[in-house]
Length: 148
Image 1 (cartoon, rainbow, N blue to C red):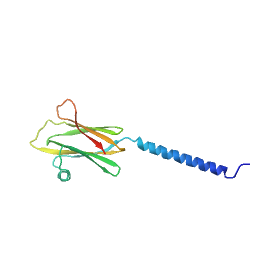
Image 2: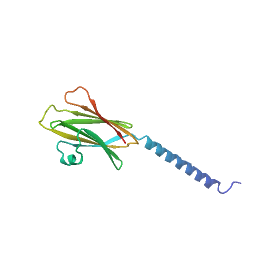
Image 3: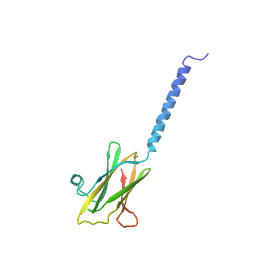
Image 4: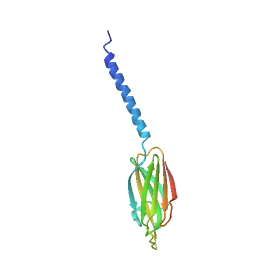
């Protein structure tokens, strides 16, 4: 004759074992999450609000808002520049490629800001920005930044 608590005890043991495995799987999933680009904002020449907040040219900086890591790239360029960009992410690295597609030249210089919004970032992210002026054959490394 078996004891009355055998079946409920077995069910309780299986429940705790399955909960422990689920927590382990969620933890592993968070560790393996890869950085991904969510959105990009562009700010062009003579953006007065931006210049008040960030008066430094030719720089990169990041900030975190909620679960979004925002990388800001500020480039001092000729006012007639027309930029295109692309982003390649690979695990904990984001490579950004910016190029000027205009041969026009104006008699002024201004700051362009690219703000990249990333999700899925882990404890460390490596950012690298490459730039290609008009009529250049290749991209060159413009800057690198580590988070945090």
